[in-house]
Image 1 (cartoon, rainbow, N blue to C red):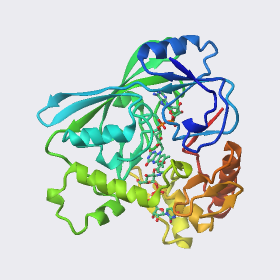
Image 2: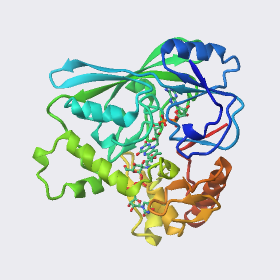
Image 3: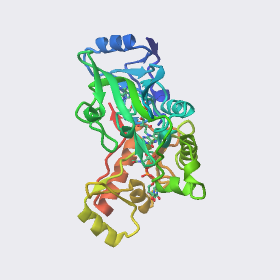
Image 4: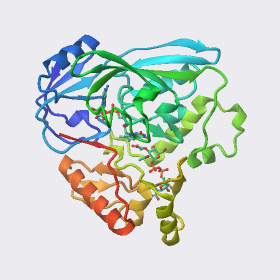
Amino acid sequence: MAVLNSDLKSYNTFGVSAQARAIHSIHTESELIAFLEEDTLGDDLVLGQGSNVLFTDHLPYRVGLIRLKGRHFNPYSENEVLVTAAAGEPWHDFVMWTLEQGFGGLENLALIPGSVGAAPIQNIGAYGVELKDSFFSCRAFDRNTREEKIFSTEDCAFEYRNSIFKSACKNQYVIVEVTFKLSRNNHTLNLSYAPLKNWFSNKNGDSLRPIDVAEAVCNIRRSKLPDPAILGNAGSFFKNPIITADFTQSLLTKFPEAPLYPQPDGTFKIAAGWLIDQLGLKGYRQGEAAVHDKQALVLVNLGAASGNDLKDLAQHIKKSVFNVFGITLEEEVTFYP
Ligand code: FAD
Ligand code: EPU
């Protein structure tokens, strides 16, 4: 297990500086067990690519970077295959590899940064699809007992940007491997998300392959979202809030053009980016922390922002949105320490 210098700047996509007590790079399951055994206070943090975290101060504990590698597949039924990847595999590379094998199911989730092991934590989602739609199981170690446990889809309690790993069992398990059930030939493509449907509007849907959808998704994403290698960010900083049908009706009387997405239980999801944009905050900056000028839901580090600068900007946004719309934004990004 390699021990690296203790600055986390290059291990989070915001690119903010923070010292950890030590940073360990974990490449095997036995290295992980050793790391967990040494964690006597039970407060160490495991990270994948650091693309959904904000460090607001130095971390008074160790950080373990999950770098376990490996992927394989086995037939499941005539039209389905089970594909397994180790937690440290980069998510996008894994998605593209499944598509190159001719498997369908993950194409709408192309180009999401991060690792395979972190993908179930918040049930990653994009373009009308969520991880839970093709998730089969994951294998994880209990941090306290070091016992291995297999989680089924039901066990994970997946919700919009949430799972048992981000709620009831937060920080309790380290995921080492994730298995997906993907299609082998009769693929069902999901083009329900408006920008994706528009992309293919003049094409014959019957001839489209999953890899064509992934390419479109990558193109659309590149036009909207900043590349963390160029401009530090963690994607959407807040979740899209869920509001009741009654609240939605009263909102629509004042803002008939509000982008709303009906949910199966009668509630509505409202686009947080639109709420922030309505306040004229796109491009707004406080020092080196700013609201992205193309997507108001993305906060960016213009270069020398600290985690606290970004947290202060997020507070300002939350307060402004609440004052005007009466809606409380909830962070998607997890703060540490
Ligand atoms: P990290 O940020 O390293 O960790 C996130 C959390 O998971 C932490 O709490 C960490 O402790 C925990 N964790 C990490 N690995 C493990 C493990 N193996 N076992 C247990 N716990 C673990 N997300 C979406 O859902 N949809 C999007 O469209 C999307 N777009 C994005 C675009 C950009 C430009 C960026 C920067 C981010 C985007 N994200 C999106 C957020 C992010 O990519 C995902 O949440 C991703 O799954 C995080 O992976 P990670 O490896 O970087 O996790
Ligand atoms: N909008 C604005 N102004 C803005 C941004 C958005 O008016 O500055 C409007 C758009 O015009 C559109 C609506 O808000 O009508 C939704 O915008 P967009 O399609 O860009 O998606 P989003 O709701 O901002 C969500 C996810 C993304 C995911 C995309 C595509 C959340 C919190 N975010 O963003 O996920 O990639 O949809 O499915 O659910 C992430 O989680 O990090 C992330 C990037």
